[in-house]
Image (cartoon, rainbow, N blue to C red; front, side, top):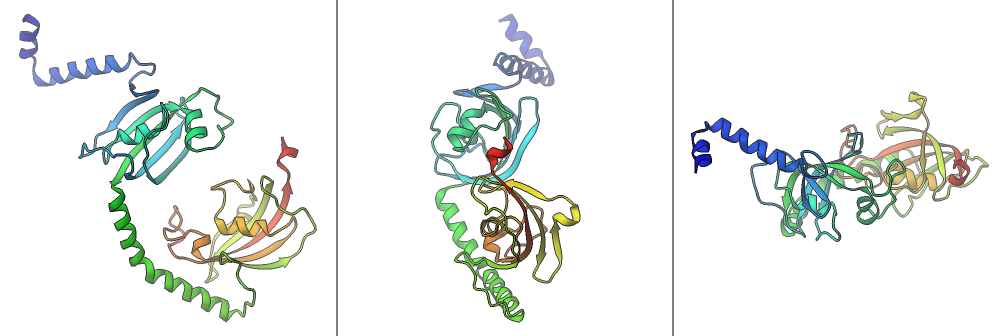
Length: 302
């Protein structure tokens, strides 16, 4: 009774501070200071509350800002994603993180890296991470929609952008006609125009390729150039998210030493959203001049 009486006399700010200290002391008893175990091997630290406390359900669609960091806070991925949630398939799944957040909540989570990359993303654990190592995943929950809401919004959006797609097709057709380009597009819509033929190796999945390229809008204005930067671009051919679809398709048609011009409708470039930098608008056809500088088997570099 005496302890309750003392609590009753505390001013409100002191009472709140006491509660915060109690909560903090509880969280520090977990394996990670300031993080609380919420599900399986998932640890949670709230950064900001949103206005709503309604969390998503499996089958809902969410739009999130997400970042992956090592345990020493080194950032190695950051992006915005829209996805449909599912029931967590294993303890420690990142799905537990999404299902814990209401709209406009921000939080940091600690999860098993191997489970994320191998079980959820169906990929390989990055070489800089060890098996059984944990990582931090920072998530801001931007939008939560039911499957029905998402379907309706998508239909409305597709109806709204239909006119933009037709306008792009007209611009591209006029460009092809005015320049008397007689080459037929590939099945995907790529216009591939050889300029110089090399005599090197043809590209295969898994090869390390080095390219120089210059990207332009159809009006001739440059938006990117490895030549101006004096820095050729190197990547593993066939690896997801390395280059836009049209560039990957074109490089697959080339061999070492080839130089080509390609014309890409937006569906093979930056699509209906444009580039993340804002340089390329939505529904914008572009063209590239590409030189395939070198092709190396990955095994020869290991």
